Amino acid sequence: RLATSIERSSGRNARNVCGYLRGADATLAGEVVVVGAHHDHVGRGLVGSAGGLADEGRVHPGADDNASGTAAMLEIAETLATAPTRPRRSVLFLSFSGEELGLLGSVHYVTHPTVPLADIDVMVNCDMVGRYDEKRTLEIGGVGTGEGLQALVARANAPHGLALTWDPSGVAPSDNTPFFRKRVPVLFFFTGIHPDYHTPRDTPDAINYLGAVRVTALCRDTVLALADRDARIAYTTPPPGAEGSKAALGIQPAPGSDAGER
Image (cartoon, helix red, strand yellow):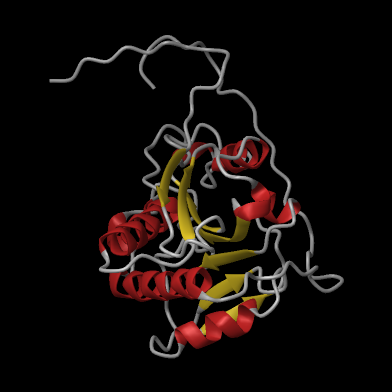
């Protein structure tokens, strides 16, 4: 049995969740590598569904978008927190809300950061990492935003052998973008859009779990390489044209009153 009550508020009612792992190196612990993912989705599809009117009101599970990225972030957090030795730099784990409504959580974070943005070396973002296969590949975005990022990820991938494609852009319809706009180098791990995106068909049975484990392991090793290197990653401006077309987002309130079950 479950009893619920709903209080409607004109203010903010979403939360980002932060976890901080202090670095082991007394000199480098003041520098931070961020690992981020968004934990919100589109609910019953009243706003944000790709399935049209037929799917409105149906649960959109969001197994790939973005339970997969959230799970990857939590696995990396647990692994680093329970390891015999900590990384040299500190690692900040950020679970964002409001991504589906326009990157609200990450925009809020970069305007109200818990650590100075100048102390953040790199932001690593996991969004939709559950559908890996070698034909569709794993896309690594943001490699043009920091000196040596592509080579660093390529070295980390050597024992994993994942098929990678590279995108120099720091801009994506995901939470790395607000950090990039603040001139923080970023990486974006992404296994691609699919027909189930933002529909009720984005279910756990469609996840490639072995592939997701491999992607998470590569992300973990990339974070460790960033956190343990001697020098921090220098910000670089992506080459001209790399940003491509900018995504646009339109939203509107759900029709009807707040009364009744949603």
